[in-house]
Image 1: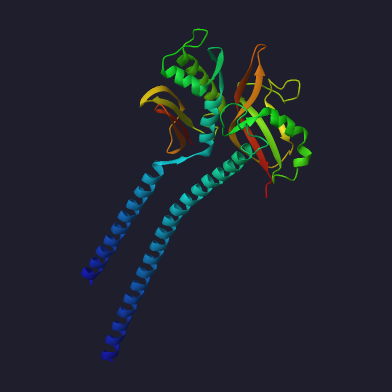
Image 2: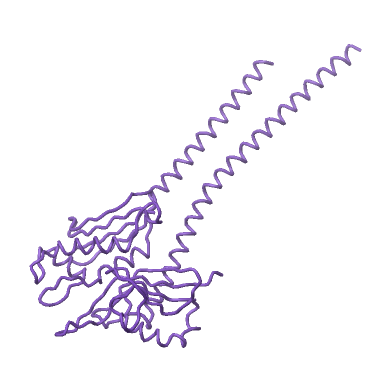
Length: 177
Length: 155
């Protein structure tokens, strides 16, 4: 009888120890899982930032590619070869023939925005020198990505013809897909 | 029994302290990486290029000057045909262009910017606006005659 009682007490003690260990293991696992999640959230937040930056750079590169395409670029018309330079005379010609280009680029719209010097209104043949927005391809929707360009044209003051370059933005609209 | 429990507690405490130290080291490394996250920006690069091509109001020998030509004129302490100092025109034009091209503030994605032109390592023009943040994107372009143009935008 006495032996049985001692055995029971020993078993109970063992059970408590096993329970203690189980709780300890459970607690430690939970702790490590939380630490792991914390670390992962840090790592993934960096990846998200990098993705956003790469997306922005890719979109800007696409717009720059368009700005430097033969339909837009200044080439050597304004002196030496320039990058990110849009020939406004070419753009006017393109605007009049834009229907022929509807399937040429996989884009929804093209706009040119004059940034400096400040001006207002949509560009027409009449106010070509003093306007803000020139819609080359009308879309009305889509996500707009832009890059800075210089908007160059030939201008005359009566005596001589000179190159005039202003600062603008080339905005390209892509479909939301 | 009590002693054993105490030593277990001490062991657990040590594990917690070690892990806490590891987390702190990890956080400090992550934050120090973020603070120096200045990356190349194609948009800043495009801005500097179009800025340099801009035709200013300054005429030299009856020829209108681009910003790049104006910088070179300013470097040599030159004047425009109407007698205005090239550096004055450069300063005013650059300020106006930056104001129009980069909207800065809490309501905009860009929180601040720094624009500087160096000639042989010496600053020729320095314009800044807004706040400096830990996330920056910039462009640095070096030309002949030891001319360097830097633009950094803070997000």
